[in-house]
Amino acid sequence: MAEKIPVTVLTGYLGAGKTTLLNRILSEPHGKKFAVIVNEFGEIGIDNDLVVGADEEIFEMNNGCICCTVRGDLIRIIEGLMKRKGKFDAIIVETTGLADPAPVAQTFFVDADVAAAVRLDAVVTVADAKWLSQCLKDAPEAKNQIAFADVILLNKTDLVGSEELHEVKARIGAINPYAKLHETINCGVPLDAVLGRGAFNLDRILEIEPEFLEAEEYEHDHHDHDGHKHGLKHFHDEEVQSIALTIDGDVDSQKFLPWLNQYVQTEGPSILRAKGIVAFKNEPKRFAFQGVHMILEGDLQRDWKPGEPRRSRIVFIGRKLKEGDIRRGFLACAA
Image 1 (tube, rainbow, N blue to C red):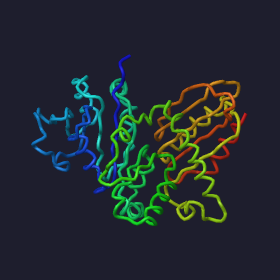
Image 2: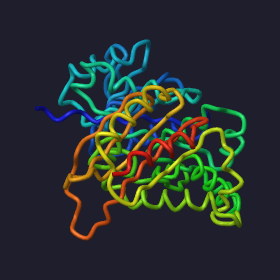
Image 3: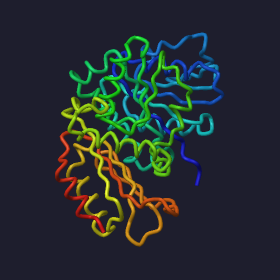
Image 4: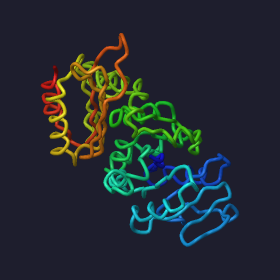
């Protein structure tokens, strides 16, 4: 079984700084070879001094990366890149500033040939600290991009004051409490914070556990009656929201799996992301799952450690989620 090539989907609203990040990847001496798939070369403004050779629509850079455009079908392009296998370590796909990253992410699960060769590594969203709040008001795509992210670069933080920064982080937390957030200037972040995250790898859910637990705290704060904690109270009416639920103890796998599958099949279009770590009754291993819309994958992972509380925890992020239905359905699965 050859190691699948990781794919990072890079998204972000117009002008947030995706191009800055892509230029860094294509020009810095990071010692890795990336294939970068962009919408238009023009947007990136490839520096001719850095181009070693151009072959049809593929430019080779002097730091070993290659760059090509999405003309038409993403699946076809990836199949073309696969013929150059061994020439690069990972693929980065840039979505347009107006795009919802979901269909791009789904490509990597839906097409059998693509799924056999590559795996989705993470969705990375670049957000503009100054304009994000405005975008969230005006542009549903901006909410989708935040909701979908595994990693968020909150960029241009030098252009906002501390209060404004606090507020924009609270808005992000209300939509997506478990994405890893980096505050950046000129997308200045170590590339390994963005690439090779393995956020879509089920084992990784277990590594990001502390954040998964913190997400829970956020959620409790939503329901604080004083409304002061984290300043999140004001933002709970966002059209895109996250719902985190916990059962302190085991769930019945015979009830939980059919419920989860059925719920995701019916409500899939409104569910952007789903993740969870669950304790099944009489099962020493932890069950982890995650999904994009209606696509769901889950697996038994490592053993529960001695003394580790067997808690079952799920998170849904989406639009107009039926919180009551989710809560009732999940709680009914308790063992």
